Image (cartoon, rainbow, N blue to C red):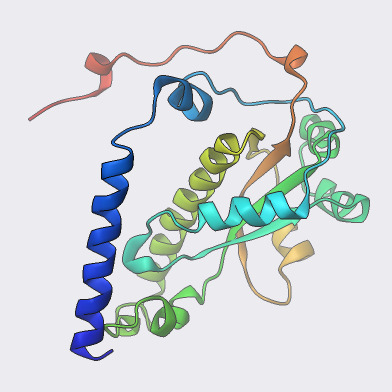
Length: 218
């Protein structure tokens, strides 16, 4: 990019953030309760559907979350059909199959090992590809860390849109990768059930550590 173009983009970005802070300096307590403080992981679901329009909006919010060098390594497969669920069920531990089948949507949060090859688009003002080319361990840890972050953004964004969430890790990554990603080489990270929950399946919220138990201020 030419310098004046970069300067223009930077000025617009700075103005946008200042304007946002002028409109809203923090979420209110109800909003924080909805996305984290009083949010719960859900295990049973109503039959209320989740539209494609909702999934597209969910993605647009999710992709706005920050990643290292804007690498955006996460890839998402939204499994909604019975045929797709049959394929996904092959990978699940027995106790998770009914949870997955009952949810309107199960998102496979994955990552693309070749994500760094798109950095000319994602990070256009500087060539960062040499940081990853031929450095498999560094490329892997960057992808895994940041796709996990993006999966967390997906969960918080879903709650913000009024969806309920139930993340799952009780499955075989190898089976998911063979079943869904044999052609493109993506790698699964974890699963997220999405929909509108049946709260009657909930139990009490489990304990959390207090600040002084696990935090330090230096």
